[in-house]
Length: 548
Image 1 (cartoon, rainbow, N blue to C red):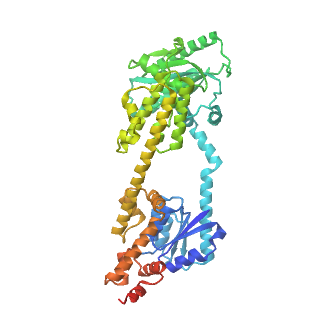
Image 2: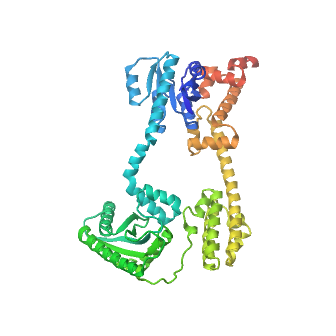
Image 3: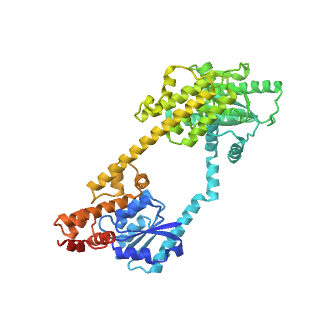
């Protein structure tokens, strides 16, 4: 479905071009019309316009100025210029602005429709090129290294669901040679010191060189997949090419031999970085896991162990594979997966927030039902998020969640998952009611400000000036105004101007053209046209009826 906008200060010509030609025959379903550049911009903000046909010489904003504004904000909208002058200077400016066509008035109907058809064909071709499979495949090949990094980063932070269905598709698409059930270890690298003349801008170069050295050392035997995390650690996932990708356990002797080999390569990596890159590196290797299970947990555990065993020391190597399994405490997983419950509540995504809460409680129920520590961890996190969000709305916690506030202040710990569930659902419901009230008050305030501005500035009010006065995006303001009042801003502005026109006709001595200027209409004929359309009679006929 295509939309066309026709602009000409000759209202009769604009009406004829918009209403009399069979635009549907060339795929145009909606035709808009405007009689000035400013009015055209308002329509562009409110609708998805594909092609603009505009006169050049118009009072106020010229057609060339309008096209320049369109190219800044709607670069894919095609523009066709109409003019009554065969002026070469106009032609040069039209070419400079990359107009689709330049037509001389009076233009034949078929010529104009042919020009619009050509512009639509150009638009279709542009979008086809943008979404072409060849271009996508080429771009994908160019971006594969970065895409692999982003995927691993999303896996270790929990943004990527490790469910094998969607993950296996990405692994194949990004050409990552690791399959489900593959044995893997994790290696964390931290650049500690630099002896060469490196500055902050060289950090990416050093990381690139370091991962190349790691790939050279580990590559003959292992798949190495790496990324840089938010803390500056280089995270490498190592998977042995020689071990079968099955769920069957490998022999202890094989695992011990592999651990020794990884340790040897890690020491060589440290020495090579020191000798050739002039940088000191600390390295930690994890226990083994099976891909992709618990990859985020392994990352979090490795990160915590790095900080615990290495901390601020430099150029150390730690292997967690040699440590016995001590049944370490595990933190909750779902509670911290992004998007977090607090973020979903802040964005007002209520259904997603309810699903997130259900997932948190499901993990507690299935894995930590008898662990009060984990129940308390979830309770404190949820209570903290709710408290922060309510205070941001400038409301008191006790006034918003009522008696549930005293659960927070009493110091009585949650004993069961069911207690946590009931309390969480109540306070989230209370917070939602509070937000709805605040949003309603906020929108009502915006509507009042918009209407006050139009009343005070009937002659200059436009969607752009109004949106600037309330510091909102024009498209967003237009949507919420229509949603709250059932009337568009342009319709309301027209109504205010017509009511002001009646007042001026009754109480002021100004002539019709002076009233037209006061109300922001540069052409009295256009003002008279709108007045008659609104009231059924012209301004002069209205005055005559009053005996003025």
